[in-house]
Structure formats: structure tokens, C-alpha cells
Image 1: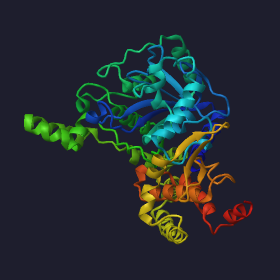
Image 2: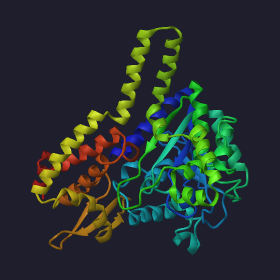
Image 3: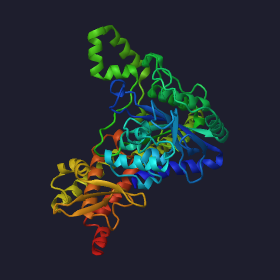
Image 4: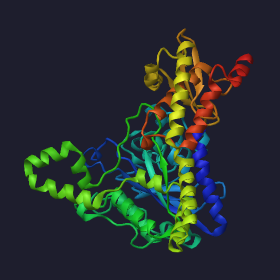
Amino acid sequence: MGRYIWASFVALALLCVSPRAWGDVGIVLNDSLDTSVARITGSGHSAVYLSRICPASPVKLRLCRAEEAGSIISNYTTLGEDQPFEWNIVSFNRFVYGVTNSQDGPLFASWPIKRILEQHYRQDILAGYCTTLSCQTSGKAEWREMVAATAERTFYILIASTTVEQDLDLISKFNSMPNVNHFNAATRNCADFTKEIINMYFPHAARRDILNDFGPTSPKAVARSFAHYAERRPGTRYYVLHFAQLPGTIKRSSPPREGTEQLYRAKKLAVPLAILDWHMVPPAAMAYLLTGKFDPQRDFELHATPHESELAQEKQVAEFDDDDARVKQLDVAVRDERVDVLGSSREWKTFREQFDSFVDEAVKAEVISSRSALDHVFKQLTEHGTPYMDDRGELWIKTSDPEGHTVVAGLTPGDILAPNSDRTLAYRILLATVNEQLKSSARRRETISEFQQTWALLERARPQSQTYVAQQGGH
């Protein structure tokens, strides 16, 4: 529920601006995965978010309908499909949650859960584009990364406003030009693809950083240059969205890095380089510290909503007019705007204290054996449970209780407390989910608005709650 509330906020923001004839374009800055060359470069991945453009097919664009939340378009080394396409476009909800409706996205992630979401995406959307055995079964077919991205990594979207004319122009260009893969890590990679699209909207807004990346374009360099461009232009209505990786058993992703940053931070590279050619290390470190530093989490905290950009613009006018009272008023408004999204330290502390009592109750009720058992819930479900998707396209998991009886529980906010979802198992999943959120850093956890919705589910699932008692009475 928490995750689809956040998606609803995004959709509402888009709908609110539609009558004023603008949409959004954004750079998707994806965390780095511990796979392939990323193990060395730590560069992550780049894509483009389009609020008013949706997929007519995986390789054709159209304007979105009113109820749609936009799309993500990206290229990869190889999508693995029947034809060597350079890029695919996928609906926003499929990219983020793996499903058409955000409320049907899973509360936690594992590779078996993600594979189910990928399979249904392939059947629903890629049926005519992915018929070969390698496309359907190979883990190297990178169309998979466009499904349920939050299952495997954290990412940010750096957003600025567009006009209808700009969006129509992009649709026309992409629908008419060849879609043939010419991927090249040095000169035509995912960040180059993103840079070209962004610069169609805002010429010279996104740039590579030769000094910090030693030549090739990196996702973080493109994001950093675009952020600096948008921050200096209030009319772009710049803001940032943050999507944390789902709790679960998939390895945690890592913040993306530019070349000099990777040398500066990754000892596995810096130490061997220092041994081979120590003269290179100090200049690389200096280049990063002076010109390459950029923290998307900090940018998110400073630009958490579109309205925050408007308030900042008003504040500039008030400062120019020496209106100190208005400046103070706007400072308070900006702070409140951020707290509504990020939460205050006091709020998070209160949730942690309340959660301690929930855990004590769960131990006494033998829902869990101890607090440390919460750290193993997702692993046990991954090893001993079987996730599946029902006829309505909703995710469930089947496992056995301590007595050996088969039990099922919903894996989505809408189903986890359904009448046929086992109450004890559901409560255990929610306890583990909240536990993971409360012990995570701000970068790795949900926004406060998302978390509050997850917390509400937890409260309803408690054995002491009236909802729980009423549902138990119906059995």
C-alpha cells in the first residue's frame, strides 16, 4: 500500500499539471548491481522517465491516457529480443513494481518473485518480440531489468517540466528513426542514450565528464550535469523522486559512481593502481573532490516535491525584495514540505520505539521466536515458500506452518490481510518489512508517506487489533 501511495502522488502531480500544458521528463539514475563490468566500474545504469509518453508497444511511443503514469525508456548492451533493438519503452508501473497497477506490487522481493513478474511481462507485453528460447530463459537478456526495478536496486529520478510540443516531437522522432542496437560502452552506452534524449528537450543540459570518467559518459555525470542545469532555472520546476530497493533476499545495490569516485572509494581498485602507478591516484582523488562530487540522496532531500521548487523561487523574490518576514515564512513552508515526504528524526524515532513493543508482543504470542528472527523471515520464505500469481494477476506465497499444514499469504498490500491470507504469516511478513525499513538509512528506506501506509497494515495485522479479531471470528 505504501508504495502505491507514492505512485499515486506521482500520478497526481502529473495530472495536476496537465491542464497547464506541461508534463515531465527525468533522468533515472539507477544504483549499481554487482554484475558483469559493474563490479569494476560501479557506474550503475541510466534511463529516461517520461510522464506524458507511454508505450504503444515496446518499440513505439504514444501520448498517455489520463489514467496512465508515464513510462521509462532505455537501451542496454543487449535486450536479448528476437530483433537487435537499441531501446525498449515500458510503462512506469511495470518498471517500478513489475505490475500494471502499483497496488499489486510485492511487499518484499526475491529472485523467484521477480522471475514471476518478468514471465508475466514477457507473456503480456513481449509475446511478439521474445519468441526464442534464449530471450525467454536467459538471465543475460536485459529486457528483464525493465521489470520490477525496485526488486533489485534503489534509484532516483531527476525531473523537469516539458511542453506538449516537446513530447510530440520526441514521439515523432523515435517512431520514425531506426531502432537498431549499436551499443558501445565507450561512445554509445546507456548514459549517452539518456543524454541525447534530455538534450532534445533542454539543449546542452546533460553532459559527459571526460575528466572524472576518463572519456566515456557515465550515468552519474549525466545526472549531475542535468541537476546543476535545472537548479539554476526555476522555470523547469525541478524535483527528485526516490525509490528504495524492496526488502528481501536480493543483494543490496550500491550507489552509482563516476570513474574517479570509484578509484577514490573502492580500495580494490585504488590499492592495485597505487602499486602499479601511484602517480595517478592523487590527481584522480583531487578531480573527484573538486569537480565530481554529487549525492542524489541530498538532491532528493533538497528537491523532494515540485511545490518545493516553486517555494524556492518565491523565496528568491522575497530575498531580492528584502522581505525578511516572507523569507522566514517560506523557510518554514519548505521545511514542512520536506518533512511530509522525508519524515522528521522525531517521527522515525517514535516509530522505532513503538515497533519495539510490537516485537515484544509478537515474541510473547509466539509469532516469532525472537527479534533476531525477523532478519531471517525473507530468507526462510525464499527457501521454503513458493510464490505464485493467481488468475487476477495478484501475488501470493505458499508455505508450511510449524505443524506441516499448507498456508498461503498475500504478497501485496491489497492482499496480505485478505480473508484467505494466513494471519500469522502475514503479520510475520509485515514485521520483517517494517523492521528492515526502520533499521535502514534514509537512502535505503521508503519515504515517510509510504512507510506510514505500511505501518497502518502492520497495526491492522496485530492480534490485538479489532480488524484482526473480526476476521478471526469469521473463520
